[in-house]
Image 1 (cartoon, rainbow, N blue to C red):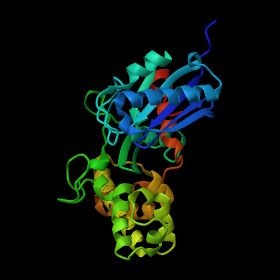
Image 2 (cartoon, helix red, strand yellow):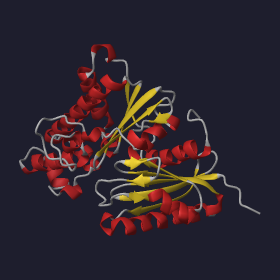
Image 3 (cartoon, rainbow, N blue to C red):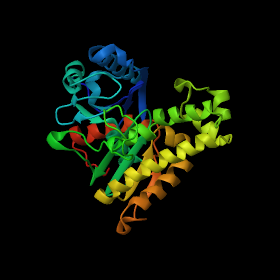
Image 4 (tube, rainbow, N blue to C red):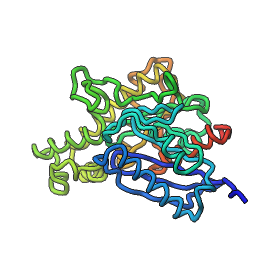
Length: 331
């Protein structure tokens, strides 16, 4: 007798870690596995690691592949959502990888592939801080900066079913720092965690962030979100100035998007926002309203993400349910 398919699996593929979680019908986590991504292993080795992590989560849940209704995978960078192809993910060194085809051949269930930021904001729309919104945009500040938009229950897609809304590559500073995409002055080049850490390391070296210098030094590998938040709490004005300026730039980019989309809700997420929500939410809201047209000012709410680290992996599973299971997006 064929096993009843009643579980969904979500997968969050990041530049430094990957996370798989199995959900029951009530969206409770019943199995999980987390591993380091190891981007230097290439596309073949990396996808093998995704498969290993998925199998481990299924085993942890105590179920079989035959009991999965579907798998949703959130991936960094542009994604061909219609065909399940990861196009050019930043920080991984992969290019044009058919994730859907490989995963379906291994697990014998349907697979949906989505941009990781889109997955995060979709989770906030379904289960988090943006429930009931007609138009919600999200900005996630981590190693890089990702963005997404859900409009009337659907993730906004571009030409040929590709993901879009790469807000991290909106220019906010003319002739600014070189970005990983090759352009200059992108939001990601001045407001991502790596950009903030680099500026704070410089401040520490010049004596403007003594607490950070003592606790983390100037090695970027040690200057993570928690270290920056602690430095702010301990009175490092140099760090606070850098973070405030980064939040201002995020607000400038969001203000431009407000003029295009007129959203109900703006969600801010990612490690930097989770570590310092008070600074980011207030500063971004003020900057975005200053940049927005008068008719749109104070018409949108700026909120911190409610789902934290689970947003991406949950959103991937929820999106799979929506596109593969035919479930209304408002539920």
